[in-house]
Image (tube, rainbow, N blue to C red; front, side, top):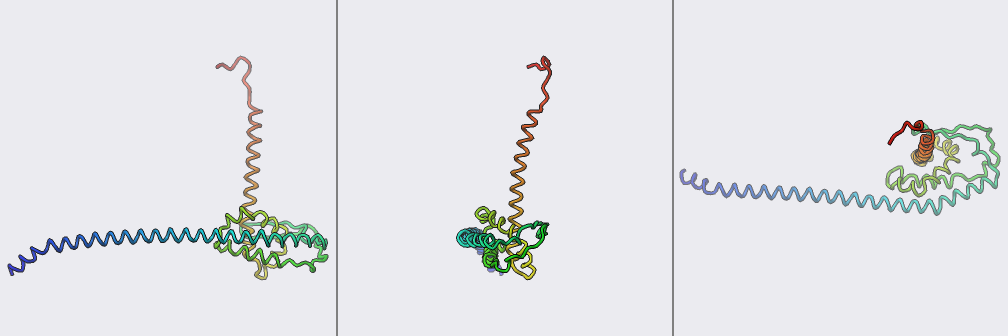
Length: 216
């Protein structure tokens, strides 16, 4: 028994050293693993961003090359057929809800001869990428946002009627988002003009001290 205890006493430091080395190895391995996970996450995020920007660029090119052309054809058709149904509407947005109210009598003259669905289907397909967040809507807004909103301001009454049957959901969602941004930018510009005018008025209306009462 004494010999066995002596043996344990002899080898114990080696076991303790081996355990200590193994612990260090595990710690290093765990640290390296965490570093690799961080690198993978960063790489995945960078790749996702590149893919989103590539998709955004492709969709903006489609909008510029095809959708704007289809919108122009639609507007030319309106003029040629003398269709006035889209005139006399007021569009209101309350949160995520959009409504349209007519302020003039309806006139359906030549309305049925108009092909409105073609370019609206293209705009709906375009909108899907940004509402689903597959593409970067902030980048797309700077490229085509204002023309997107301006056209839908005109045709939104028809879009809202069609949406009751489940159509154009993504297009309306993107319209609400971008319309709010357009309005916010307009208000910011107006605020700057107001602040500038107030500053000039304050300077012009500043009270002057009576002669001889102000000393340096």
